[in-house]
Amino acid sequence: MLGLTVVIYALQLILENALGGQDWLTAFGARSNEWIRAGEIWRLITPVFLHASPPHLLFNMYALYVLGTGLELNFGHGRFFCLYFLGAFSGNVLSFFFSSDNSYSVGASTAIFGLVAAEGIFLFQNRKWFGRHVRRGIGNIIFIVVINLFIGLTPGIDNWGHIGGLLGGLIFTSLAGPLFNIAGEPPAVRLVDGRTFRDTIIGAATVITIFGALAVWGMISA
Image (cartoon, rainbow, N blue to C red; front, side, top):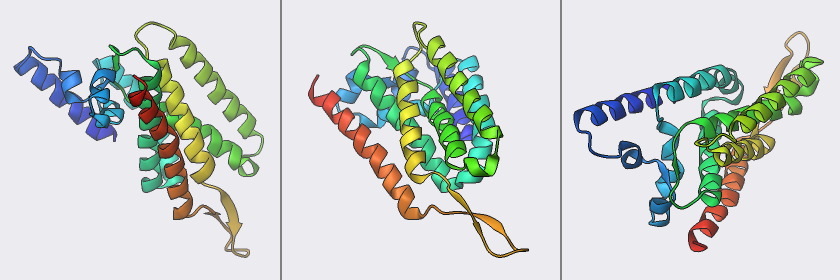
């Protein structure tokens, strides 16, 4: 995702400089309530690939690298892929539902907040394997979330997107995140994940159902 997001941003810059005269963020798929209500529901996902400036891109990609490396190792590629895009979807849906009609937003922070929530739930659900470090880790995560949501009160930051991403990551990881248990007999003891593919389907379906219903409600109640 990191490489693809950087490539898309480079393409965005090339088109803006070469052609100009158009709102390329909206054209590429920014979260625009007006266009979502017109039927362009893919805008509930595509903003995760778009960024408004180089610092915006660098901050989110750094966060993706720091959080994503360990999570992808524990979740596996497929489940991490689901987590990332479910966070983006839930964040953009909540932003769509609560934001004004003329607002729009871009950025991977919806998905990043989903990863933050996933890290906290993962630590809590597997706390017996991490010992005393769990409390400190979860405390740090809560601190990061609170500080970022406080910063998100600044105009121009999509806090609803952040909250939605948190909720999506929390729900999915609670239902489908890794649950490690001991398997085998000494000396061949190992940790294995007790979750199944069915759990991933249930977790993803739950997030899609909840936030899909919220998106439909937002579209028909306009």
